[in-house]
Amino acid sequence: MSVSIIILVVLALSALGYFLGRRRALSLAAESGGKLHSLPGYYGQTVALFAAVPAFLLLIAWLFVQPVVIDARVDGMIPDSVIPEGGARSLVISDVRRIAGGLDAVLARNALDEGALIDGSVDFSTIRDRLAEVGIALGNDVPTEVFEAAKVYRQDTKVGSTAMAIAVIALSMGLGAWSFMRIRPDLRARNISEGFIKSLLIGSSTIAILTTVGIVASLVFESINFFRMYPASEFFFSTVWNPQFRGGSELGILPLLWGTFYISLIALLVAVPIGLLIAIYLSEYASKSLRSVAKPAIEVLAGIPTIVYGLFALITVGPFLRDWFAQPLGLGSSSSSVLTAGIVMGIMIIPFVSSLSDDIMNAVPQALRDGSYGLGATQSETIKKVILPAALPGIVGAILLAASRAIGETMIVVLGAGAAAKLDLNPFEAMTTVTVKIVSQLTGDTEFASPETLVAFALGLTLFVFTLGLNVLALYIVRKYREQYE
Image 1: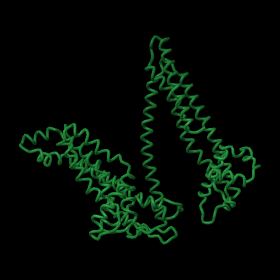
Image 2: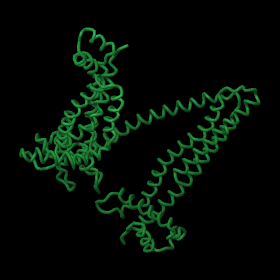
Image 3: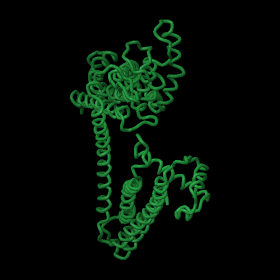
Image 4: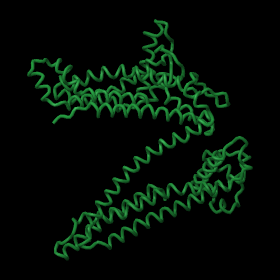
């Protein structure tokens, strides 16, 4: 039984428990003259929560534990003699999973008898032919141990999935029935229901915190492994980025940081002036009807997928800058450039600056405007001397948040700026950023334990520190210089 079906069954049992629990509460209320501790709906919620929440917790735990247990058993079945020289055990385990998945597909098509597969009465050549029919190509040199491990993996997965379905559904039915039988007029159903909700809220907050801790921990631990293989001084201070997966790599981060800074700076030079002018117009000059149309239309820019922006940079902006500026001025001949990516990225982050700045300027009390007008100031003088200074901390925070968004962008850089890691001041030259190289170092069939792969985690940790610093700086500026109005 698939996980989705198990979830649907548990949700159906939970819904049934709600209606039965509420109905039982109403019948008890009729018998006792309407004396119930809580509303009837709370009794139904209690049954529904007992039927759903523990079952889902068991399902989540099972989904985490089962693969670990099965992988450990399968790993013990594979001797070191079948591991290819220079290869990794994890690659053999991946082959085991791939073959097991192929066996499932073959059996689903009734192209092979399951009993013959289990008792080994069918020869390996027949199995290989059946696997080839579903797109699983096996060579003649596949070790017997790997194939036997694949059969065990498939069988254990099947047994584990069946046991999971039985255990989860049984737990849902059992706790639902137990909760239903506990319903009586003096049961504090509202307290139980609200306690469940409070625990759910605490659990959600904990998951968010643990996710952040897990991300940071994974970056830190893998970065430590990288710095054990590659000198930290060369990584942080070298000006050459030249990864060679066969040795002799130079992994200096400075060209990547320079490309990230350069492209982000151009993006901010595009987005900040335009975004602020838009915010000033929408906040101070536009009518309500125009504002109700213009602001959502501008914010649509933030919802456009970045791949669309990347294609726009590649097909439209890049060739335009090359043909009208780079080639006539003798500054370059490529449509991929820092300026291309920076302009398109600036267009993308305009809503981050304009929308946040507009909201901040609207938060400035009308009394300050009226006082300025009363002193004889014009509208433009009021904007320059009163509104912008009052909203400045929030505007700076919006700019820094937009900068964090620009630093983390990948797709626009890939299609608009190229992948060349170098130090150059020419904005019409192709460059790249940290995020692009993170993707490229983890793409393809590479050995995970090599410095050229682990460097992606060091790059990610460096980028995380930079963006975290910008966010902290933005919060510090907003809190330190924020003005409170009543």
